[in-house]
Amino acid sequence: MNDTSRNSGAEFWRDLKPITKVFQPDASPEVYLPNAADDDMRYYVPFTDTVFSKPLWISPSKNQWCDILLATGPGLVNRHYHPHEVFAFTLSGKWGYLEHDWIATAGDFVYETPGEGHTLVAYEHEDPMKVYFKVTGPLIWLDEDGEPDGYYDVHQYIAMCKEHYEKSGIGADYIEGLFR
Image 1: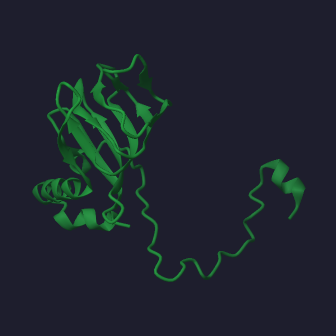
Image 2: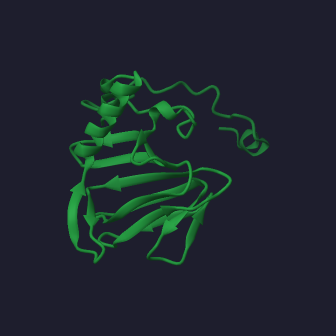
């Protein structure tokens, strides 16, 4: 390699040939979704009148998913906790948890500790709330005292997505293309 070309910003790798053995045995292809956080509401599955989820990747066997959570106005995701960690990166808007004093805006990262209960709220803002989440395991719904009151897991998420995509004309099988 020519270090000079790297320093000059030239695409020094242009003459490299792609590897021929791209996938290991039994490996699945990547999921590639251009402009994943776009505004095409057909792909956002409604939770409430103002809160929606756009699935990006789903692992039914690991009970995991990645999505863009969208709030088109003030919104709420009921009280819950996760028995496993959750990662969030704020793309736009303003959101937080009633139980904490921080408010996340574009560029903010949040790590949710397993077992921590919270009530996710979307605040009024000039931009819609869009947050990339990576969720592992179920959401355990909580009553007003913080006691378990049901759950929501990847299988319920898949069923909700299939129903929405069938009604929207995309087709229920769309969601299976995100399974890995």
